[in-house]
Image 1 (spheres, one colour):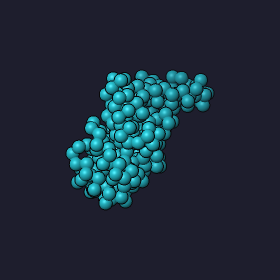
Image 2 (image 1 turned 135 degrees about the horizontal axis):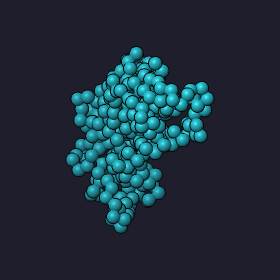
Image 3 (image 1 turned 135 degrees about the vertical axis):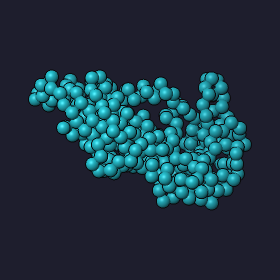
Image 4 (image 1 turned 120 degrees about the vertical axis):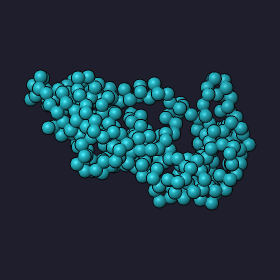
Length: 285
C-alpha cells in the first residue's frame, strides 16, 4: 500500500496544483478592492446535514497560502454535523482567506459527501465481519483527498493506484491467456523485479475460483458480479486460504445481503464516483 510519506506528497501536490489552477498570477478581485494590510475573520458554515470531512486538509491549504492564518477548529473530521453548525473559524489576512476559500470549499464539500456515503454503508454493515472498500474510480488529480474522505467515513482504502498492488482483472487474464498463466507470469515478474506486492485475482464464476485456488500466494479473490448463492458457495470453497471481496454494482439495498454471505470486503466505486457535494459556505464575519 502507499506509504504515509507518499500520501502526504500527494496531498501537497493537490494543494499546490489547486492554488495554481485557481489563483494563477493573482486574485485580482481581492487585490483590486481589499487593502493588503486588511485583517478579517470567516467561519465555515454547515448548510446541510452530513459527516464533515476535510478540516485537516483545509488547515493545510490555509497554511500553504499564508502560514500566519489562524484556524480555530470547533468540529473535527468524521463528526456528524447539521444545518447551522460552525466547523471552524479562520482569521488573519483578508486577501489570504479569500485566496484559499474556493479550494477549501471545493475539497470539503466533496470530501464530506464521500465521508457521508461511506458512513451510511458502514452503518448498514454493522454487526457483520465485512468492511467497505473504495476503488480507483476517483476524480483525476484529487484521488488522495477522496480516499482520505473514505477513511474519515469509516471505510478502508483499496490499492491507491496501479503501482502499489497487483490486481489481475478479466482483461489482464484474457490478454495473458488465462488465469493460471496470468498468475504464474505475475509471480515471475515480481520476483525478477524484486517487488513485494500483494496479488488480487478476479473471478467471474465458481470455476474460476477453483482455478485461482490451485495457485498459492494469492492475497484476495475478487468475486465480480456474483449472485448471493454463488457468493456463499465461493466463500465456503475459499475458506481461510485467502481473503474474499465482492464487487459489481453493489449498493445500499444489496450490500448487507452480500456481507451476510461471509465476504471479508465489499468494494464500491459509488463511494467516490456517485455522490453530490454537501452544502458548505465560508462566510466573512
